[in-house]
Image (tube, rainbow, N blue to C red; front, side, top):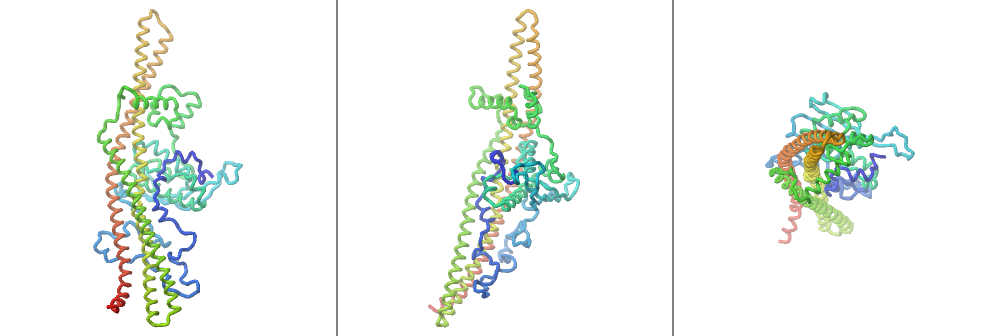
Length: 530
């Protein structure tokens, strides 16, 4: 059950933004175990079997086009198509300006049809060799894909492999974090609920990748989406490093091909401790490192992004409070309507005068409007959650920003370590050459030692050149990604706020119209008093 019930190690190492999950998701996706009296009923009959138009589910769209739609630039359902037949709004292919700004080429990905499969390997644990696969359907007109329609089955383990590979190859890019392997959720939730939630998260993750202007055309994603069977992704560098260590071939010199990955991922303990020593020297040493981060523009933008993260967190909390408050209003309004219905029933059964019966009918009208308002508040909340999900998306993206900046720091640390190592090797070579010139005759051991040092200098110098290129590549990736994030954030936030405001206006106007009808009916009582 590897893909359904993960281990604790997977949780600690996963690159996820699950800790940023908002209460808005719970409010929008949760469904009661039993039918709530305020929800649209499954039957139009009462408990006594008598038809009651008050409990009839409204037909047609949840909200007719309000009069304010004519004076607002876009409709309140901008970004969503009509009902898909299941009572929910279906998201259009162009969800965000991000997908439009990145490329005019189409890359539409859907994840569906979870299916349990049995692994070929034998297991003594009953059910221990089963896993779940998902059908991933891709439609595209990108020429690099060499086709337009693809269907493959992938398990969660394949997504982890894809995510790890993208992090290795495209260091410095803001790569969206993959869904988490949550032990707690997989144990607490029912199995089908957990599988469905994972399906939704996988689809959202792949759509994020499809919006990225670089990742959407990369070989790794193309292979993942198009190649049948197991993913033939190239072997990563840390597998090669592990093989070296097992065979005893690891040397004390950092090879040029190894510097393109962090020491931790390379599993090279000697290199890891060298960089750890360099990090301690940078933090606590008396002498300054020969190489430091001196890009003032980058440091300034980095500080601004950290501030943005804090503001996003605050805005997300306030959004949760708003959604919860509107849900409470809707629930309270509905409970009030149900209470008034009971009063109506009581008054109708015990009425002796026509005025009492008329009053009971008017009270029922108020109750009807209260329940209608409750349902409108629920619909409003579901739409507001969809608009404000942009805040959650950008909070999750901040993990990718931190990872990209960490790639930059790691590459700089590797370069600093190589510069220090090169200085140490040359110093040792000079001392050995000086000692050899003083002594009379030749010493074969010193000659061999000098040859080893010169070879180490040559390899380390090549590694330093490779590390410089890698560091500059990551810096350029950071620069382009920060610029892209600034542009897309502005477009996404304008879309979010426009949708939020328009939806609030539309539903508020509809609720006000419902109450205005009742107010007109109740105005005769004010006239009678006068």
